[in-house]
Image 1 (cartoon, rainbow, N blue to C red):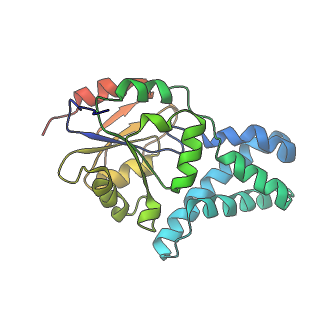
Image 2: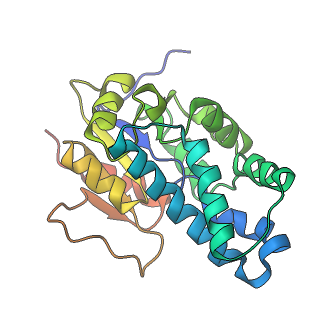
Image 3: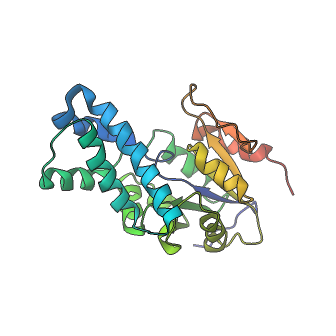
Length: 232
């Protein structure tokens, strides 16, 4: 079916933390971590990102799944918790079925056909297909863009440059939609439009002198935010 888009802007959605919730692992971690499960899940996510940043800077790329597994081991070790290889594999498999945020699917359905929609992630293609497919999000996208093509990670400027090319927005406007402030800053520094999804009112945007193009508290606000963006 031919899709006719009413606007030239292309939308690139971050996946982990924006469409699906990494903290959804907390319940599964209760078996090992009990009341510390949320703390383990938060450290797991923190180190997953840190490890990817460091590998990108060091130019020793390993895909996001490797970063995720290494971060899980670190978080468990910090909390002095044991984890068998079999259970580790179970948790890694569960990471491919993270729950979507409640606003994700309705927002994508509302935007589909109005803008070209892409998922743009540090995750590998197989991982993206599984986690998005699990939540019925995959069918809403016109395509996927993974950093695996570049062998680096956000916020490397080369990754955002690749996103322009991969989405076909090389000469047009590309707008990142992300709940990760570091991702928004990276995209803005690379010349992209970027909307910050601030679901948590207590979240603070880093003061780097680089501001998001717009701030929303839910993906349900995205159509209005896009309509209000300056037209170039």
